[in-house]
Image 1: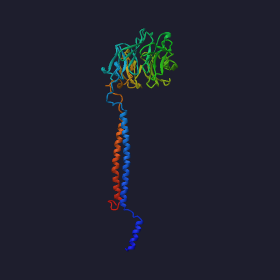
Image 2: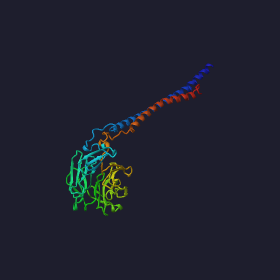
Image 3: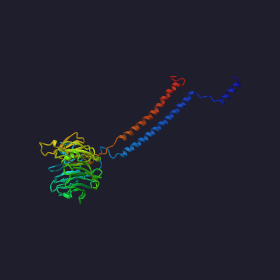
Image 4: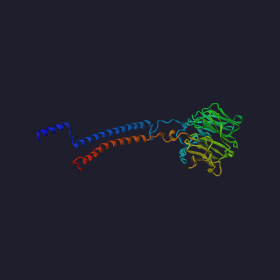
Length: 412
């Protein structure tokens, strides 16, 4: 090549850049992709880590105490401690409570008081039990059995007509029916005693059984003498706005006796018994008076569990040779899964569950929901796998790509 030709080529090469080798371009492209993948993997891992830390913090912050760890010292409820989920009932030697889950266990019974009477209602906090004694005698009394074992007399010698009774939701007040002649009516009195306040005038000795609604805004009660004038009514807690829910509704015309009126925990329905003696039936009706239906036949004296899922009652069908035996029967609220508990009529269910009352070793009812903890751990594991995969996968893929495309590669 002549000097002139060589000089011409050098001038051209300075003006026109010569393309770099293809292999170097591929290496740089691979390095750029790997760098981008590492950055994206780091961002994803950081996001997962932050979410995991937040979930873990939330899980441990919201948990009051693990299910297997005891709570702090439970409130001392005196003679009522350890009877969560139990039922109070009357025996010839006093007021007792029994565990419906252990009907044959003698250790699952406890005497609350040696005084005779019929337990009517618990205060919502489980510290007071309302008791009616001497019913249908001139010595009728309505009293409150307190957690320390003492008794507070509310009403005495009312005149053969004390009927029912319940606590207000805050436990400060008791409503009951009683009196005689023109003095009969529905009254309210402080749970610690005092002077009764008449909420509603009555005519004669009506069915009564007044009971507060779960929110304390209303009182349901019966009006009538067991004849064709029976009515189920509801009024406001101050005695105003009384109105009829059920009047002359078939069985009410021949009921003979209405009683044991109670609200379901949600306040949408009521349960009660109608009939003569222990051959009556248990009915359910909505709080607006609609949907009346028979629940159990025969059966009377219904008592609802605190969550409304079960019912206790007594029935002539389980009597012994037609005698006065009044068994305590437990069933699901639809009348199924019937079990015989004791030979005595039922009383109210204790309002606190087993954990709240310290029945089962004072184990907390608040359990740790594992969802947040599991999700947080899973997120951390996933983030680690993503990082490992991102570090390994690009290297394998870039190696195969180079071998197939670079001149002299294994597969090219």
